[in-house]
Length: 315
Image (tube, rainbow, N blue to C red; front, side):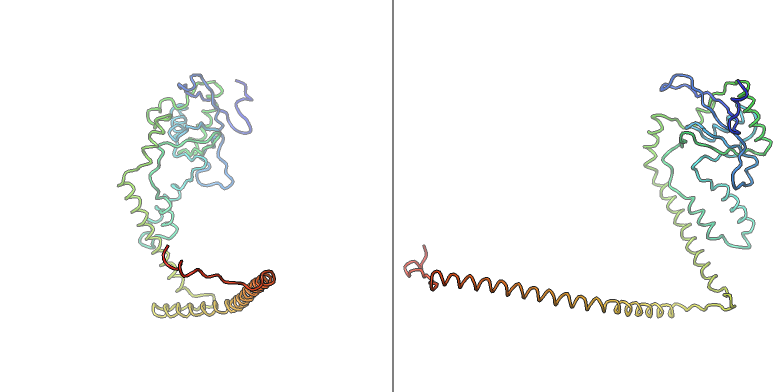
């Protein structure tokens, strides 16, 4: 293999063979692109991380652990972060550690409780996630030397043309794909009642803790002095109810002032409607009177006919 094909735009190229299947019983080569992870805002894991681009759609953390740890025999993978998947476990672990150390000194903050609340979710309906085409992943190794050894081993394997079958040896350790994947999904859409109840109870417990923590924080802030050194004195329950009544009265008065103009407008509108209705009645009366005069002019007096007495009985 030529040297130019071993690297492109700063990425080391690692070809892997996709396993054959009944749907596509032909050999296929997939290319991974690797380089040291250099984010715009580096963190503690950046120096020992690899940025892997164009991972196969069936990639899991086990695939990458097996690739670097067994197939390349280079470094030990600590964790993997995939594109589009939020990574909260690291920050939560740090928070929990700091909380456990200072548990006697301070209480759990609202933000920490909110993180716990966000982590509570219903059971997933998929037993295995799939990646989108061309997705990337960040592979964090145990140390920087493991990352460098893995990148070097990938370059060496590509140079020698070593055959690396993607996922070889881990198929039995992963949930199946194909039809069985969707059968499992259909079954997981109806979780066990006990699991649902446990999830809801956990959520409501933490939700109550978040509400209580926010209330304590508001009380603490109300007791802090302002820029001038004064503390705002808040009223108790009775005064609070009176304050609410005064506020309600003020709102009513404000609403009345707003409706003064509307009442005048409605009064004017009603008066106009009455005038219009009267004009219509007068117009109809004049039309009927003219019709009667026309009938009198043509036929003379209007005669009213009566039925004879002999027909006044029952027919």
